[in-house]
Amino acid sequence: MVDYLLLGGAAFSAGLVDAVVGGGGLIQLPTMFSVFPNMAPATLIGTNKLASIFGTSVAAVSYARRVAIAWSVAAPAAIAALVFAFFGAYTVTQVSAEFMRLLLPVVLVAVAAYTFARKDFGAVHAPVHSGVKEQSLALLVGSGIGFYDGFFGPGTGSFLVFLFVRIFGFDFLGASAVAKVVNVACNFAALIWFGYSGHLIWQLGLLMAICQIGGAFIGSRLAMKHGSGFVRKLFLLVVSVLILKTGHDAWLRW
Image (cartoon, rainbow, N blue to C red; front, side):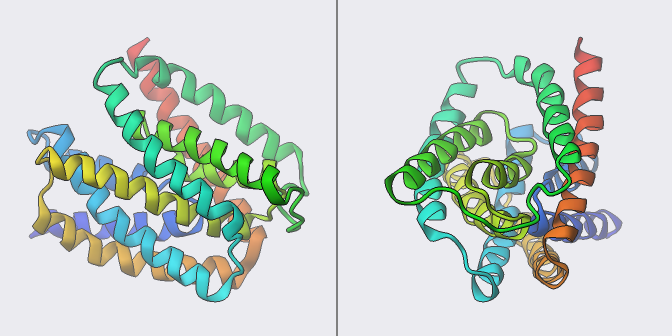
């Protein structure tokens, strides 16, 4: 019973953080590995995706009801992410992702430094592209992040938020809303993959999904209530934690 309460709390917290800025996997997945140390990693990752897709879906719907989602960016990015997440998942079965563990902390430091340095970064929603160029860039972002999510994964939501602010000129709230739509596509692709290969514990995943939904609902409401400033602060906090976590992992493997 204590283990399930721990997993429920982790899922709720992950859903809340994910709904605002991504990075909930930092909370939920390590908890699952701690509670089930002898279970196959693929099964835990697949079950994690099952719970997460419910949380991201609820967050996406919550944003769509109260924030004007830029569907001209969200739709092509989500479609590309759905397709390329499969390629990423296949590639990781052929090529080691070890180099990503060493590179990721460096990339995250660059993202954090840029965001800290630009005090007005993501403060104003001022889209800078339109038409074919906007959709082409959305396809590129969706393809790259989708492949990354399938191949490796940590920080996917945070990278999406950063890219939608940096490339498209969105504010943090608008970027987070679009990121949720793309996150759903990534999770769906991964869920099909893990479900097909039998790496899912349906009962546990659905139990955690209920907690994820509660966290996602509250997280999306907090983001919409407090606006881009709040999302920016949480973004920097999550990226900082990601830097520490991935840096520590890379150091141990050096």
